[in-house]
Image (cartoon, rainbow, N blue to C red):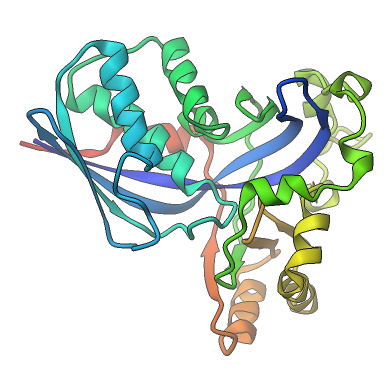
Length: 306
């Protein structure tokens, strides 16, 4: 029995550091968004072993792989003795701030319920995901979400849409821990309670102008991790400048980097930017946002082969 399902990437419209928590993590407030860039994951049921196969040598295929750990956690939680061979066709840049590993883990939790014929309560699914990684619960939901806590506490919001995104990654691998370690003191030298997270209602209202019309998301894009990451990797700043010159309306580093995403107002504008960047050798990919409904339908309509 074989199951194939897409594993979508994400971008962060906003990412704010609210302070250092007593447990050593940083308190976040982030606006997360799924996009249509996706890895392709195929699952083949085995008797007992868990195996990972991947076409990208930068992805571990042992027990350190987060999707491997997702399979183990689901098996242990449910008391099953099943196995699986997971084949990953990698399209999301590794260590690029697009959540590829977390997405693979979330999709694995979703897919193996069907493959192994087990059904978890949604709350248990989110708890398992949260233990695996901060972004995993978000990918279980998809669409546009507010993330607080370590980013692992997610609340669905009305979907935001951007049809003409352009992703650019120069091949730099940014370690998330390093990005947080180099934050300026003003972002970490206070308790999170000093900058309480927005309520869900306030977060949604913050995306609206006084007239009640939706404000362009590029007017609100911000990432507190950009300052330390761009200081260490000035090439990312050069990419932002190139995209600005190409006419992008909004430009931001996603997550802890190193992917930069840009919003264009038309397909023609995005195409011109792609042509402008063609000689750089950077990885570039057109993309668009995915709504929560689109994500959930993609998860449900996966192909099962006997």
